[in-house]
Structures are given as structure tokens and as C-alpha cells.
Image (cartoon, rainbow, N blue to C red; front, side, top):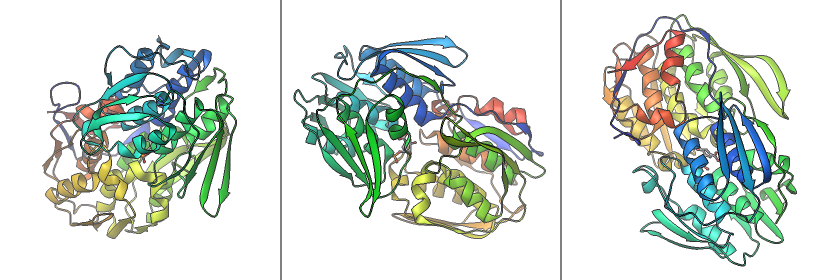
Length: 448
Ligand code: S3P
């Protein structure tokens, strides 16, 4: 079932060389944070390049339910009139976060230290995902939570009336958990400290500083120690959302595996906490180059040029790179099918609790497409067959997971027989223009 309506089966077939420019949508992580931080500022935040995918639209609606004004001005331009730190109103109804783990976890953090009660729910995928990783630290601030067994949604959070500051070591590498704790720290007096052993995406830290919060990061033996001074007055900002490297991954990988391709993907942020896939592809021998490397808004940005890469080798992806490419393993496993030899992916237990169990979803689908996959709790390997040797020809489940759907559609562009996914509907959560963008490059991808 699609997250918002009837299933949309899709098929992709062996495509001739992909050519042209791929203008991918705005960054999902930064889009969520722009709306939430805009809502927590006093005054008008302007956002351009916002990702208008379902996940982000659900976060926008949630901010309205908490009292902010969120207005679509057209052409990717949005206006948020914030209520200030601690200014959230109590929502009238259940907050439906759809498919979005980032949306629900960040918003829970932002409301948990306000004297209000809110109930959160989502689609079948989101309602199956673990929330204790967020509600455990929120309880330390004084928030109370009642949810379904195993810490699942739907869930009600009673915000702390007199929140106390917290020092918290994040037990899993998760930017969502880190961000939830920092957002809870905003309406808490004193210093909130978050320690992360592995660096995860740092958009929250950068954006909080941009909105005028006092926040520092110190790299120590224990990890990154992030200290936030509570109860700042956040100042509204003008935000230009960069294009999403996690969406860029799809046209980049499609070009690499499709014979005769040469695709330019302009203006992609290469923040080191996000760019692990591109390093990995280069190590495999992919013809992927950075053009026009520059700095924008304090972040490295480049135009990515990806060409058909017939001479790739399987590699062992270093486990300490996992956080910087956690959303990209499904599409990496597709590229790995076309390399010579085995690609090993270790230290990736978190893949089991994404929109789907991504190791299982990919393993089942790749095996159906004729690929040998081995897996354990926190690792998997894919045996590459090389170009012209990947059978394909399977119908696979997308399991309410946009990245699973897109990954198998990329596979079908280069495998011998077409690939069908039972439901491409979830693609709209993060990459609503996927079908037209890939079609514009020459890929054969369509609704069945
Ligand atoms: C995100 C963090 C990651 C990532 C997700 C977006 C974020 O999740 O998978 O797509 O914007 O903070 P985890 O925090 O679960 O690793």
C-alpha cells in the first residue's frame, strides 16, 4: 500500500545512455529543520528551494498545528511566521507525520519541553519504527510518554512543565536523536550537552548557530561534545536549501551503471557528514568527478559529473563511513551488482530500522533479480556479476520505503530484464520529480 493512496506499480527497463543535467530537489534534512527552526523563531523566516515532498509537507502542517504560520509562496519559496522558543500551542488533533521518522522525532524533541500535550501518528512504516531512542532522553528533561508496546506510535507526549537540562550520550549513531535532544534543550534553562561517539549529519548544529543560538562542538576522546545554551531568542533567517546529496545519489548511480551515460548533477552539497557514497563510488573505480568545487553558505558544494563506469571493483566499505552514507546503502548495493567481485557493507545495523528493514528489503529483491547476497544483523555483502550479466526480471516490494523503490528502478535501467516495484507511491515522500527527472535523462521508467 502506498502511504497516501492506492499502490502505484512501476517498471524500469534497460535504457540507452543517460544524458543531460539532473536538477534534484532540496535537501530533506535541511528542509525539515528550516520549517521547525522557522516556527521556533520570532518573526518571518523565508525559505527557498524547500523540498516539497510529502515528508516535509507533513512537517509544515505540524508546525501550523503548533501555532506557526506556514505559507507556500510558490516556486519552492515558503514563509514561516514563528512563535518563538517555548511558544508552541497545544495542537487540537493528532499530528500525522506520514512516513517521516525525521519529522516525528525532531518535532517530539521541539515540543517535549513545552507545557503542552501532543499525540503523534504516522503510516504503517512509521508506526512500526522505534521511538524509545527519542523518548528515553526526552524523559530525562521531564517529559512523559505513553505509546504502544515497544515504544511505537501512536504516542502521546506530555511536555515537561519545568524542564531540567540534560547531558546525554547518544547510544546509536543518529542525527535524529541528537537533534531531538538539542531541540528539547532549546526551551530548557541552562546547558544541554549531547555527546555522539560517531559524527552524524550536523545540519542541526549549523542551523541552530545560524538562527542565533549559542552552540559549540568540541571533538574529544569521548566523541563530539555539543553544548547548547538554553532559552535563546532565535532570529528568523533567509534560507536557501541546497540540493539533496541523498537524492543526487539516484541519477549519479543510474549514470554509472547505464551504458553510454554522461550526466551532470549540479549544486550538490558535499558536507563530509553526507558525502560518504561519492567517496565510496570513487574507490570502486566509478567515473565520478567534482566540477566547479566551491563553498556556499559555509558548505562545500560541487557539480557532480557521473559517467558510465565499466571497470568497477567491489570493495569493503569502511564501517566508520556508515553514518555519512546511511541512506545510500540501498542504491550502493545496486551499483555493486555491476562491479567485479564482492562489496562488503559492515557496521550498518541502523539500516534495519529505517522506513523498512533495508538490508532485508534489498537482499530479498536482489536475490529475486539473480544476485547473491549474504547478510548478518549488522552487515551484508553483494556479489557483483559485472555488466551484461545481471539478470533482473523480478517484481519486488518497496515496503513503504522510497529509497527501496528508487534503488530497484535504477537496477532495472541496467539489468538484462526489467524490474518492477509493487508501489512507487512512497517516492513522493522525498523525490516527487524522480520519474520525470529520470525520464528526461533518457531512462525508461514508467507506471505499469
Ligand atoms: C536524518 C537522519 C538519519 C537519516 C534520515 C535523515 C536527519 O536518520 O537516515 O534520512 O535528517 O536527521 P537517523 O537519525 O535514524 O540515522
